Image: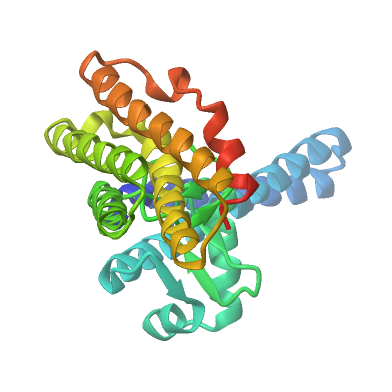
Length: 285
C-alpha cells in the first residue's frame, strides 16, 4: 500500500518559530513599557500595554504549540513510512521514535483531530495505529463491514482480491452438478475476468465498479459455495430453483456491468439487484 498518499505532506515550522520569537520579544517590550507607565502614574497606558503583552504571550504559546505539533508529525510521518505498514503498533512506533506509549497515542490523536491523518484512527484498545482505514464494507476479497465509502484502498489489493473471488467462483462451479447454475456462474466469472482486464487498463474507473467488486462478487462466491454445500448435503429442489434464478441474475448483472463500464456509466448509481440481496440473506447458509 502506498502510505504516503494517506499522510498529509510535511509543513515547515519556520514561520511558527519566527512568530513565536516575535511574540516573546513584543511581550517583553510591552511589559517593560507597562512597568514604566505604571511607575509614572499613567494607569490607562499601563493597562493598554499589559493587555498587549498578554496577547503577544498567547500568540507565542499558540505558535510554539503548532511548531511542536508539526515537528512531532514530521517525526511520526518519517517513521511510519520507514516501517511501511498500514497498521503500526503504538509500542513499535514509540520504540522507533523514542517516545512513551502515552506520548505516541496523544500525538496521533492530535494528528487525526487536525486532519493530518484523514483516514487514520486508533483502535479501540489504543494499541494500534491504522494509517488508512479499509473500505467500509466488504473488500474485493469479501472482508470488511458496512457500506462502501468513497475512498478506495490500494488498487493492486482490490484487483488481487477480486481475482481471487472470481477464481473461487470458477473452482466451486467445476464441482456443481446443476447445469443451469453451473453455466450462470461460469458466465459471471467470464464477465468478471473481462471487467478485471478492463480495469487494469483503466484504473481510474475502479470506483465505478466498486459495488460490483466489493459486494456482488463476494455474494456470488457465497452463492456458489452454498450451492456446492447444498448438493453435498441434499437440499430440496426449491432451494436450487431459487439459486438458479439468483445465479441467472448475477450473470446478467456481470454482463451489464462490463457494458456500462465501457459506456463510462456510474455503475454504483445504476446497479439495482433486489432479488440478489433477498436471495443471499434468505436460506443460502
